[in-house]
Length: 74
Image (cartoon, rainbow, N blue to C red):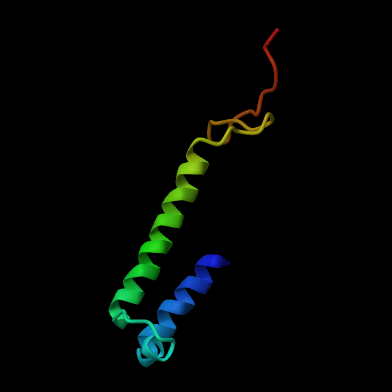
């Protein structure tokens, strides 16, 4: 949801670049777009990093189509 809002901000600046100056920002519209796109990239990489090191749930199997075996085999 947050990424959609950031993409919407990029679209607004791209469609109406004058809004940057109307808000009183000294940056150029391309700089504002680059900032928002960099923020989207950084947040996406942060989420990917967190998911990479997240522990799997107890009932989950790492093998595709695996057995989902729980506990030691007797």
